[in-house]
Length: 113
Image 1 (cartoon, rainbow, N blue to C red):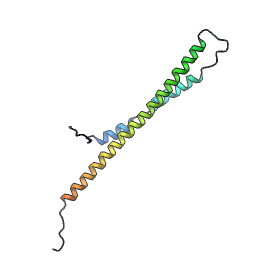
Image 2 (image 1 turned 90 degrees about the vertical axis):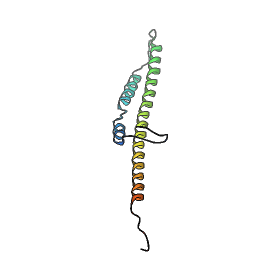
Image 3 (image 1 turned 180 degrees about the vertical axis):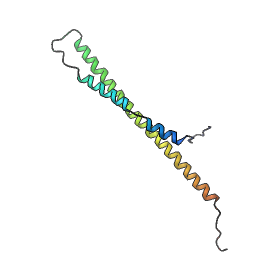
Image 4 (image 1 turned 180 degrees about the horizontal axis):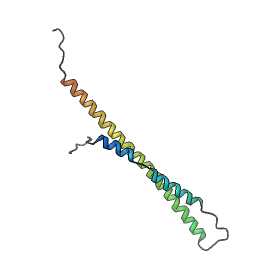
């Protein structure tokens, strides 16, 4: 199907279904797991060789995973919103166009006859 610049050609039912199937729960679960792991980092007490460096690395990596998961959650939610909004705009445009065509095609009453 050809598309023109600024136009949408889409199966609105598919867009709605697709938007409803976008689920950030996997990213949320990964974020929760990373948060839990980060919480297990404890003070080395009697410093073992490499313990401080290991803990610092665990903290840094889990912080990066958490930040990434937050971005994924937000991205999925934003993409679903765009898909829903696009479907709604397409349906609105289709209905508006159909109404205009029906109005233009309807017999016009003439006054004074």
